[in-house]
Image 1 (tube, rainbow, N blue to C red):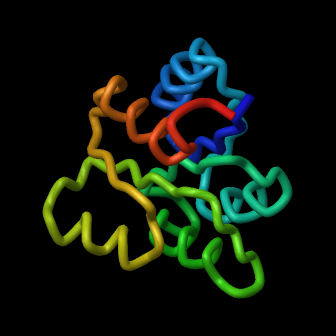
Image 2 (cartoon, one colour):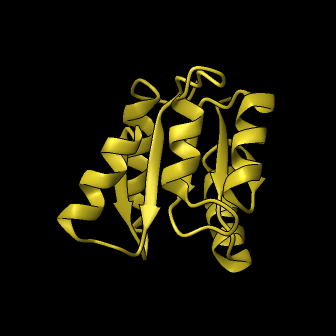
Length: 124
């Protein structure tokens, strides 16, 4: 069963997303801010990270850069989740080290397809 780190500061979004992912058989762990995301990713070694971009303490871009940095060296797929849908936002996410990008409100079937693609076509 694949483990997903869901980085989301909004409790309602976190609850809905975690329920949907759990029903699909994924184990979901959480972080509510960018600093906690880095710590949890290093400690938990998830199979995939869903990274909200607008986060307290440090934003999702910086959290992703830190995860991809030499010290953390986290190689797992990171999908950016954001309400910002401009091309420049997408480019900024990829420059920070994100693997993919999804806008909010999240269209779950499309996100699920991206998750499964990042995990090699299915759940681990």
